[in-house]
Amino acid sequence: MTDTSTLTRGGGNPSPSGRRRPGRPAKASGLPVWSIPYLLLVPGLLVIGALLLYPMVQVAIIAFQKVGLPQIRPVNTKPAEWVGVENFTQIFGNEIFWNALRNTVVFAVLAVSLTLVVGTAVGVLLNKLGKKMSTLVIVGIMFAWAVPPVAQGIIWKWLFDAEAGIINWALNLLPDWLSTLVFGRADWTGEPWLNDAWSIYMVLIITVVWASFPFIAVSVLAGLKGIPAELYEAARVDGASAWLTFRKITFPLLRPVFAVLTVLSIIWDFKVFSQLYVLMGGPSNREAYNLSMYSYAEAFRSPPKMGSGAAIALVLTVILLVVTAVYVRQLVKQEDMS
Image (cartoon, rainbow, N blue to C red; front, side):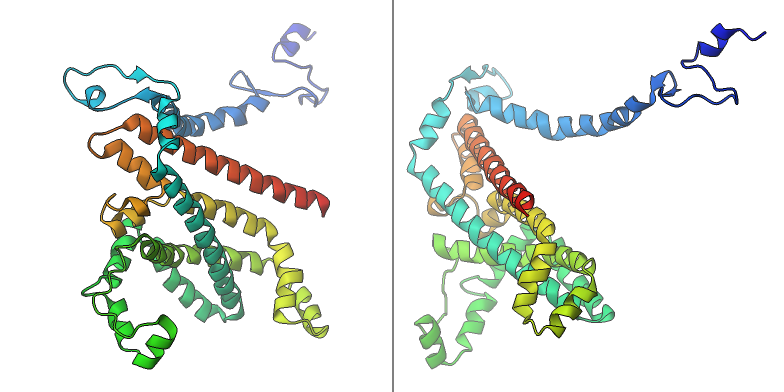
């Protein structure tokens, strides 16, 4: 006779054929099967916690403390002083903060909009090209996307240089009547593009759009490849224009793609720092600060006020979370209504 206690010791009675009956999870190495996927997530969660969550928590803590030279010097270090919301009170009462917030929002709106428009237009164009030409154009534009942010700033700072920049040289090649008609002046020799806040941000917008639209274009192209060609053929038969076809077919079907690209662009453009730092030559022009530059200047310029810098960074993080949450919520509502 078979010992029934032996048969049931592993969990679950075997079927007459010797197989485990369904309905009770099997165990591997003494662990339930349902727990294995969660265990596989542990290494990734540890990396995220170490590289992202821990620094964010530390920034949040420093935002409520007074951290300066006495707290960061290598000898005779003093403990950080807890000051509550004093750092936030100081930055909210500073005109530079509100000017930096305005610069950040206006720049992000313009840069995100232009990046999406240019990237979508290029993506649609790539979809119309042949395979070889499309591949050639993709490789070419992706070189711009692959340029590091610091190098982007250096390239465009050189192009807009007042003395040796190509932009001034090219504008001087225009006929005087045309340059005067379009720009209101004929001589562009020595034009200091990177002195005023508005011109700095104009160059920054060009820099960011130049480097960001290839990612949008390739993403839109990938989405277009998944749209059935029969829909466009039916639109052509019905006599629909290119704009009507895009509005009625392309955009609705690519709405999830545009949603992700918009959220990513908002996050990237709200916290632009490296390009602006290079174009300005450091935190020298307070009128051209954005929140990232203002946070850096508060934290690292002499005398360092890391508590204030952390408070500005925390405010920027909260703004990004709120903007992203509101945008995603609106998208979910539109999907539910449709």
